[in-house]
Image (tube, rainbow, N blue to C red; front, top):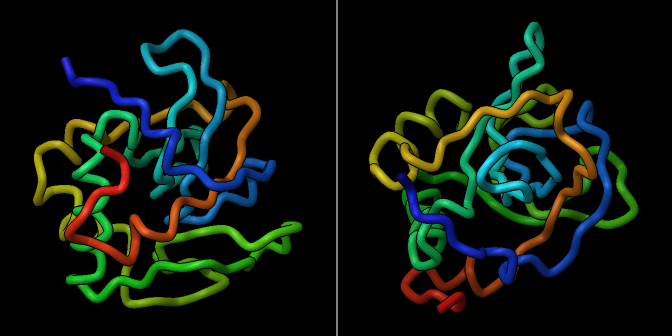
Length: 157
């Protein structure tokens, strides 16, 4: 069984978002009933439209120091991260720039999964699927800046 951490301390702000506006690469939090982690900190990667399943990494199952490593690996793979507001929320939000119809990038869902997730067993073990209909109080979050820009250190410990 995977170890669960309290990684909520990396959050600097939250804003409510409808599930239909989720973009791959957003970090979100939500209420989810009937699971071990009822308030996931979730790196959203993919949504299966037909059966309404959302998939991604539950960062609460990633060691805090590995979260910093996640961003250094993304940087190494020439992925982009940063603040944006493609969906016209009140405030900008943090997102790993995985390609979307609104903003094309070289980092696709498949490439992110193969290059980042599959190369680390802890990331593989934290990969989760959730039924979109059971997701409540969905919020996109912005995370602490030091985590992204200082890949060698972990401000979480």
